[in-house]
Length: 175
Image 1 (tube, rainbow, N blue to C red):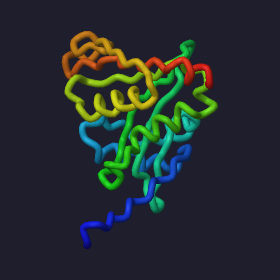
Image 2: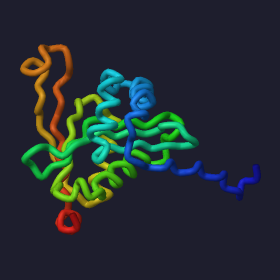
Image 3: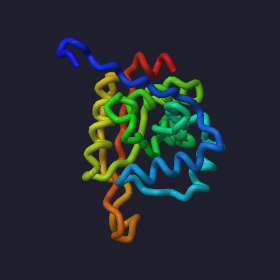
Image 4: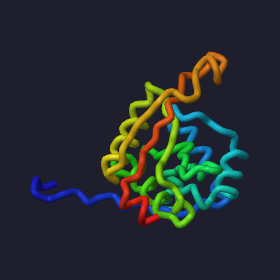
């Protein structure tokens, strides 16, 4: 290929609300994205059906290549992101940030003044994604230990830090 020719960019996956029938594909995607915790396939089916308004799948050529599960925290003005998964086939496209932005723009997240998620200290990919997302939207990111290894996980899982991204005033007002 000549040096002055840029290779074609892969197409951007379609972002959409999940359906219960996506549950098995979501489960397979999560299983392929180590070190994500694997939930049961049934859990992913229920998420895709009951929480579809605050979850998103990214589809490329009929294949689920991205997934974010989330929900509005009851009695809070916060959107909680449970899990982010991006297939190796779709990495390098900024898909994680695009899915996050897609979700916070949904009407169902209008009441959110911030985004919250939990991340273990050793999950560099997640820290990178959420720091980059905070910079992209102009939000302030903070974190503190939340689910503690010995208090919550009986010593069997690393402490999860509650990461909070406060939305900038103009984003919060638009909601």
